[in-house]
Length: 275
Ligand SMILES: Nc1ncnc2c1ncn2[C@@H]1O[C@H](COP(=O)(O)OP(=O)(O)O)[C@@H](O)[C@H]1O
Ligand SMILES: [Mg+2]
Image (cartoon, rainbow, N blue to C red; front, side, top):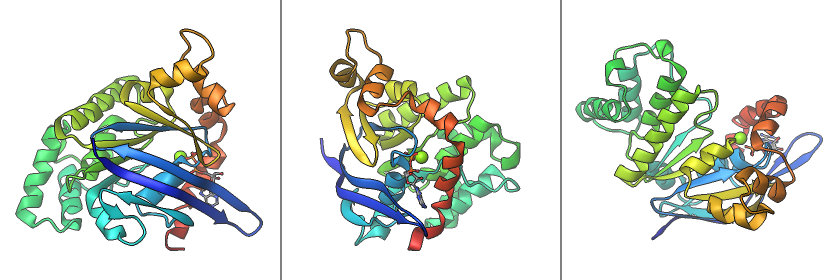
C-alpha cells in the first residue's frame, strides 16, 4: 500500500468582523492508495473546510499536505491535475445537454476536441448516462444529475476523487445506485475515494476506513468494526453508538437537519478562496 494523501497539522481559521472560527485545528491524516475513506463528523466539525483545503479551493492557515505526490501549498496546480472534486451542490448548467457539459469539462482540462468527445461517451457509458447524452441537464432526475456530477469529476482520470456528501437529497433507490457506482469505480479503476458523509449507514456500507472529526480535529479512526467495538460500549454496538460516544453528538443526520442555517455559511466559504 502506498500513501496518496498525507496531511500535517492542517489548519484553517476564519476571521470575520466579530469572531475568529477555528474550523480545522491541526488535522493529521493518511490516505492509502485504492481505499475508500469515510470522513464523518457532526455538523460544523470541519469536514467541508478540510475537503476544500485538500482540493486547493481554500488556502490553509497553517500546516500542509501532500496530495497525489504534489505539495498542496507549493504546487496547487499539480494537485488539481491529479484529483477530481464533486461538490455537495453540483454545478451543471441546466440549459446545456449532458454531452456538451461533459465535452466542455474535458476541454477545460485541455483535452483535444476529438478526444474530449470520445471521453464524454466513455464516461456516459461508465455512469449509465448513455441514453441521456442529448438531454438538457435540467431534465435529469436527482440521481441522474448526481451521476453527471461524478462523471465530470472523473473527466481527467483523477487518482483521488473527493465527494462531499454525494447522496444527500437522493431517494433510496438512487442512493443504492450511486453506492454501487462508487464501489465499482474503486474496484475497477482503483480510484481512491475520499468521501464526506452525514449518513452513518453510507459510511458503513462504502468506506473501508472511517475518520471521525470533531471540532476541527481527528477524534477517532479505524474500520467500522474497530470503532464499534472500541467506542460502542457494549457487544453488538452500532456505529451510531460509537459515534455518540466519540463526539457526544447524536447521529450527524440529526445535526444536519437542525443546522440548515449553518449550511448556508458553508456556501459562503466560496467567497474568500483567494484570501
Ligand atoms: N467562510 C467561513 N467563514 C466563517 N466561518 C466558516 C466559514 N466556512 C466555515 N465556517 C465555520 O467553520 C466551521 C466548520 O465548518 P465546515 O467545514 O463547513 O463543517 P462541516 O462540513 O463538518 O459541517 C463551522 O463552525 C462553520 O460555521
Ligand atoms: Mg459540510
